[in-house]
Length: 355
Image (cartoon, rainbow, N blue to C red; front, top):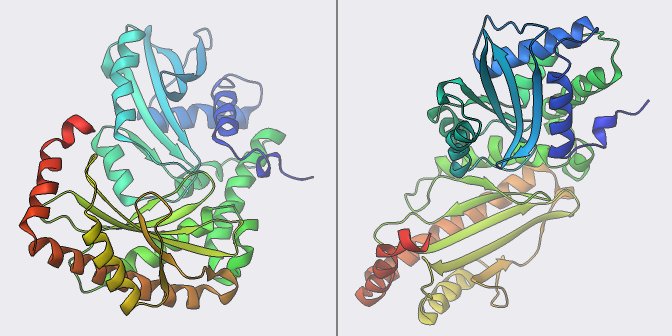
């Protein structure tokens, strides 16, 4: 029988599973019941948590921009667990504000509001730091797999299929190198591409001997994942980025270079032209591109998945170095034009109002 969760891959489907699991905290299935309470303990940090069967536990979904809310009583006092459930998308600082708002709306002491990020994706160090510094608990796909792997033979099809779905995704991660890149879309959609970005491309960027790039980021919409590089800001809000995007349904990676001023300031056309000319002259694998907002260049061709992970990695390294050189060129041009520095400095002064 095919696994339901290989088809129900959205965050809404996962929301439904979590609500189903928590509301079965007192069901007749001993394995499901234990897993429900154990997960609640881990997410709240209340190790001796025991819920009186006579007390109510209920869940809510999509309330105040929070994916799942679990409301339960301990020793007569109401507690709330807020869960940000993610399959792919990132965690934003704004989501941290909802804890206080929900506590106020529910008229509950904020100390009894517990928060957890539950993300069936790879761990991202910057994201985990943001989450934990804000007092949330973070659970990523390997943590989740380790948890559910302890509950075997539940004789509950829903529970067992979810556990096996997570286990199979982790197994595909462990076998990633042996799977051709053009087959990755069959093993967890974007997950293997994100693993490639985090495990192979991030270290490459960080070891390059230059100080022109910010720390790499992983971005992308629900349909794709991308390595996102930004020029290091020295004295202005001039923004220069390169995005290398991987879509499971494409036959290769797309590369786009963009530049714009902070806020609403336009980048002088002379500066754009100089940067374009520098890039195209020195690196023929880029082409001039002006038809997209802020876009100044694109890769001439996609980097094909069929060429394999080794070729892909080497070709991307060349393009990252090219972008680093472009960033150095931009810093040089800005240093030689005080009027451009002043233009972007004015934008910087107004950034807080703009954002």
